[in-house]
Image (cartoon, rainbow, N blue to C red):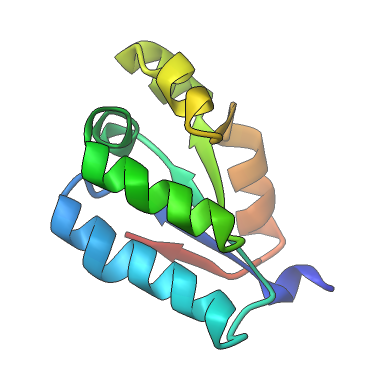
Length: 114
C-alpha cells in the first residue's frame, strides 16, 4: 500500500456535530467502501479536550478504532490541555505531530482538514 492510499484527516473543529456528521462518518465509510485503504484521524487542538470529555464521542471513537480507523493526537496540545492520559486510555496514540504533519504536507499525502 502506498501513502496515496492513506488518508489523513486533520480534525481541529471542536463542534460535536461536525465530528459525528463529517469526520467520523467519512472516516468509517472510507474504509467500509474501500475509498481509502487506511484512514488516520489526527486530533489537534480543542478536539483533544472534546474527545477526552465527551462520553458519546468516546463511544464513537471506540467503534471507529474497532472498525480500523486510526486515531493519533497531538501530544503538545494534549499535554497543554491536561488530557494526554485520558486520550491514551481510549486507545489513541499521542505523539508530537509537528514533524509528521510536515512530512505529510511535503509528500503531498492526501490530507483533509476539518
